[in-house]
Amino acid sequence: MVESGKERRGSYAKGVAKREEILERALDVIAREGYRGASVKELADAVGLSQAGLLHYFDSKEELFTAILRKRDEVDSVGFGLYEADGSIAMGSIRDGYLGVIRHNADVPGLVQLFARLSVDAADPEHAAHDFFVGRGENIRGVFAQALAARQAAGEITDRIDPTTLARIFQAVADGLQVQWMLEPDVDMAATVDALFEALDPRRSEPSGAADE
Picture 1 (cartoon, rainbow, N blue to C red):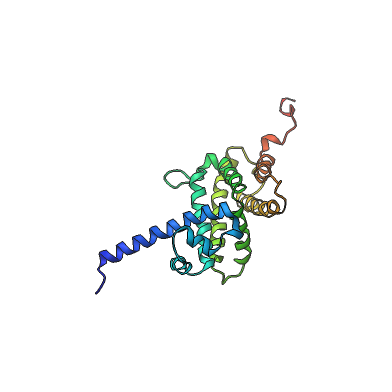
Picture 2: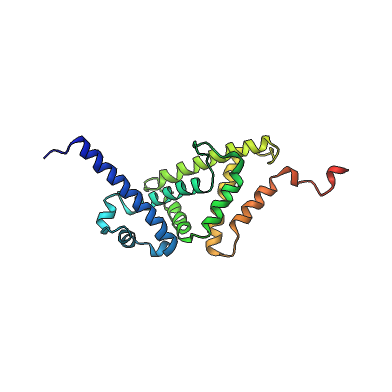
């Protein structure tokens, strides 16, 4: 029996919905159980599938974990106000939104561990996550450069450093802090990044009272 176009569309829609369910459940499981405790078997059990059934929706375990991180970014971008309802950059809240994501990361160590481990493996151009991490970095720096340029124009951030360079610095600081935090859980990642925002504020560079002299 030949499957009709309507049946194919229905089957495709169900597959997309199941994939989304898997990713949403996976975020919860890894956040709760940690990276080490989130095996393919446990993720499959969480959505009522066999391991083979779970991987039917993904090309490999690596592709599954890459999709989980992509879903995390999607959820965080919406949840912490990095974008407006129409999809444009939320210029006024880039600092608060970014710090919100970093604070949230401290509550989900399993996802931080997954990100750190996969990012190292993804340095291999043949790795399933390579394009994701390269594209993710370009997108983050693009968003930040645009937002930082707007803040520079408003006099809220020093214009002595090119916004594209500043964007790369913020990315490097945030990613590096995650490694430090995994080694030293007492590190306050959000406070450290916030200190960088403060250091770049030209209005904070003058000693108290200097403007009145």
